[in-house]
Length: 101
Image (cartoon, rainbow, N blue to C red; front, side, top):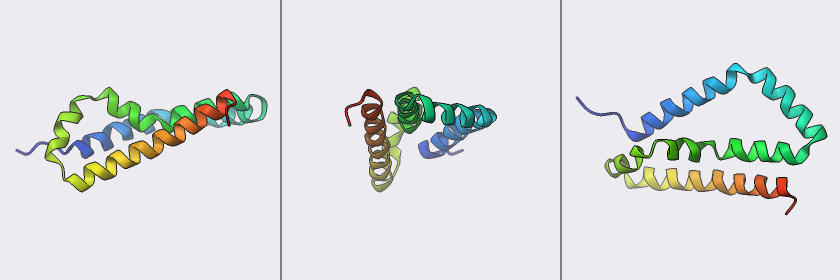
């Protein structure tokens, strides 16, 4: 019996996180609208937290790091680049929320 790929496990975990977020979609929409209009710095911080979600999920499941050795090198590189891109945007959002940009 073959074990699931790390990327399959990540997809399942991220899917669970998205399902939990979609339960409260109306609240997030209204909250985002109010924050965008009245507290833009807090809106940037929430956007930064949302952008950092892939890294948060990956750090939460640290056992996946050991299982990456069984994946193809190009998949690992693509995954790392996608994590870095989302983290760079999250850093941009957090810097905007603090007024550095």
